[in-house]
Image 1 (cartoon, helix red, strand yellow):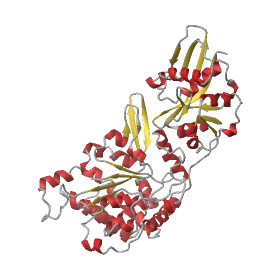
Image 2 (cartoon, rainbow, N blue to C red; image 1 turned 90 degrees about the horizontal axis):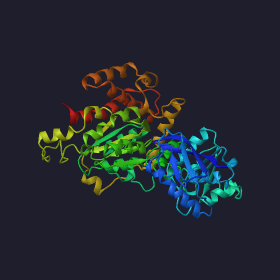
Image 3 (spheres, rainbow, N blue to C red; image 1 turned 45 degrees about the vertical axis):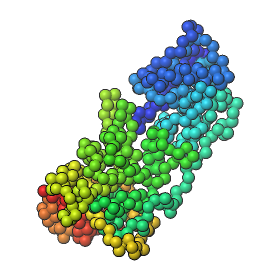
Image 4 (tube, helix red, strand yellow; image 1 turned 90 degrees about the vertical axis):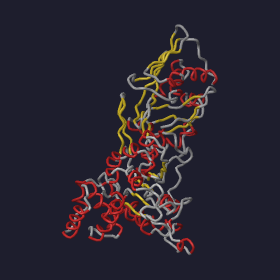
Length: 514
């Protein structure tokens, strides 16, 4: 037999497409030719595969070899086609029976000695294989635990081309190669280990309260205050009170990290919500994703978790403005000439900033900035961007008494239990919908899930006029009030809940009022 084909896959963004790796070995000039819209790293597979076959002890006669990766209209990238190409060649040379290829996907990079190396994106590839009825997946041993997270498929981890061939020849028992899942266990009590604890944060009761409300409803939070007032520490404490992930969320997050090659091969399943802290020198492509070959950015790495931006005005305004659409749509759409890519971005934004370049405004006795400098500094944050912030909390300078005689304060584990309780209420309320938290409510959902009484309607009408609110700002206040009501165990939003939510919108008016 001179022709054989095996099944593999390619990842573009987060999209996976199945690829048929066809090999034809026939008499003729001894050339190795590859076709199928290939990138340079895929074309280099020819040298790797031929050398790996020879060093693995297989015979490779001097014949004409043509490799086609189909469909030819899809761009092929990466080194993950090495193993399926080698397997197809060996099958075409009748050194491997082709019958064992049925309903089997093969993927992996080859070293020159025939060793199979791990590749990124295994999890979404195996998930795609299951959708198409594939029952077996042969993957690198280092990727086996990650691939075995997917149910409904037999995952076989291999170390070398020789082992792969022996498996397909039936010389190795399948059970000896099957992967073991080492995903770890979910331990809610251990989620906050190694993180700053809210019990270590002295003073700042208002900021603590705002942080708890923000996490309980998945709302965006902005903290304003002088340097050293505990803004950054509060943000890092938030990582310790995030609610636990369910299985679907864990798999979705792990899928993103898998594409970027950022999963732990021993415990691949991500069980903690991500907390991503981004430096102000970040570029737009690094933040939202993109590049020549589009890849997920920081907002996608923070999916179902927190994105923390410290020193917010130091970020380029053009970088901050690209966050406006993802904060509303909870996803990012990237368009290129050869395709469109969609990356999830359902994250909670936490930001911190000084009120002026020196950090002392509005204390004019200490502030050394001119009015023009203050206006320019605050002007780096646009009103449309601020309109997407649900809670804005002021962090005043900490008193010496709080540091010299610290009080025993509530720890993160206690706060996390309340947050989990509020999230449980929301999960029950939105069961059967695509909404998981109050922050995800759309305008059309407010009448159903956030009905207001007559007194509450009058309060919001007055606030809308006095505070010059936009429709988006008004909706965000109601959603925040819904979260506060959930934390109080109230089925309906009361006037006191709206008043507290309104208080968190007055701080930005204090600094950005025109």
